[in-house]
Image 1: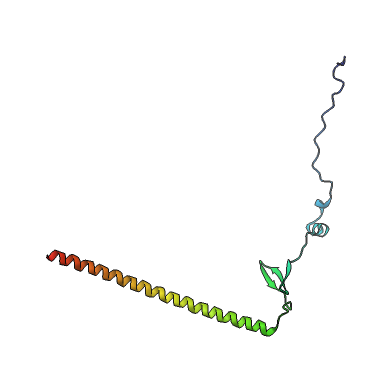
Image 2: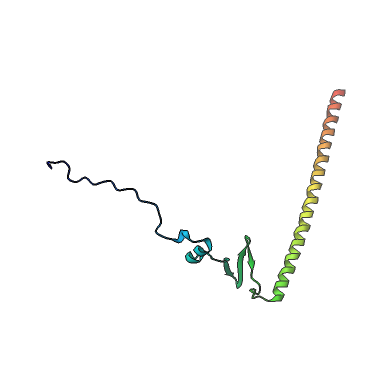
Length: 126
């Protein structure tokens, strides 16, 4: 035990400043993008021989990247058009069938109601 008190009494260190050692925060946005490599450009991918790029929230085929035959492309477009027309026809048929079903259901309910009224009327006569 020391005679004159505690010999080891370190002073408290002052809190550190939060200043960054990097001077990149002083640069403008374009310089920071160049320095840090934040400019990626548009995302692109190659899928089944076709090059696609991401623009405005959608994947778009790049011009001249389709390696297929022009006739194949026309055939696919024609087939797509046929399928769309068939789909529209089938939707129309479904709408017509639903209308017919609702009509027959309404007629059936009316007939059931008339039958009930006739039964009630015949029971009153007896």
